[in-house]
Image (cartoon, rainbow, N blue to C red; front, side, top):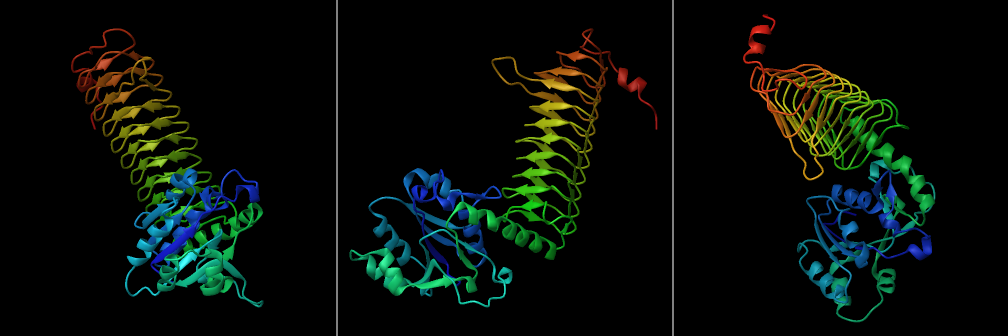
Length: 392
C-alpha cells in the first residue's frame, strides 16, 4: 500500500525474545530493523509517522527515522488523544493509513520472489482513517479493531513478519543484496556481493567501484568514479568524486575529490581533507583540516591541526597537542615542508613555505620561508627557504 501516514506500535517484547531491547530496535548489519522499515516506507511515499513507544526506548527509536519525515512520538496515557490529532491532520485525500503492531520488514515489490503458496499475512494493516478516528473516541481493543477492520498486508505486498533474532540474521543477506543491486542499477561496480555491506541510507555515485570488504554506513555519501576498498570502513562520511580509499577507516570526515588514502590509514571525526591529497600508509588524522595537494607520508599522526595547501609532512611526523590542561591546535601555512620524525608541540604556527629539518622538536613559531632545526634557533634562519629552493 502507499499512504502518507503510518502508525507504529513499538512494544517492549524483551521478555518474550530474551533480547536486551525490543526486536524493532535490533540491528541488521548495524542498522536497526525500525530504520530499515522507515526507510522503505519513505521510499514508497510515507512522510508522517506516529510512534507509540516505551519511554526508555524513545530516543533510540526516534533516531531510526530518516530526515525529511514528520514523527510524533508518545508513551503516555494521552496516546489516544495524540493519535486522534495525528489522524485528523492527515491529508484530506488520504482514506487509509498504515498501522504496524508487531515487528515487520518491507521490501520493494521488485525484490519479492515469485509466489506459489497462499499469501502470508503480517501485523501490518491498511486501516480506514475515519474508522480508526471514530474508534478512538470509545474504549476499545486495538487488536480486536484491527482484526475486524484492518486489511492485513502480506508477503505479496513485500511485507514479512519478524519474530526472533534468528529471522533477523536470515534477512541480512537479502537486505544487503537488495541495496547492492540497486547501486549496480545506478552505475556502481560491486566486486563481491557476499563481502560488501552498504546501509540503505548510503548514496554512491555512478562509476564508483566497491572492492571486497568495503563497508559503507550511517548516511555516507560517495561521489562518482571513486575506488573504495579492499577492506575500507566508511562511517557517516562524505567522499568526493575520484577519491581512492584502500584498507582504511574513515569516520565522520570529508575526503576531497581525487584524494588517495591508505593503506591502513585512519581518518577520524571532525576532519576535512582537501582535493588531490595523498595520505600514505599508517597515517592517522582527527579533528583537522588539510588544504588541497597536501602529502602525508607513512606514519604521520595529526590531531587538532590545520595544514595549508601544498604542505608536505615526512614519515612519522606528529603533532603533540595536549598539556594535561587543554588541547591546542597546530597551524601550518601553505607549501610548508616538515621533515621526517618531526614533533610539532602545540600551540605552534609554521609560516608559509617554512622548512622543518628532520628529527626536530618544534616548540616555537616559525616565520614564513624560514628553516627550523632541532632545538636550536627555532625562530628561524631568515629567508633560508628562498635561497635554497630548487629552481624549476
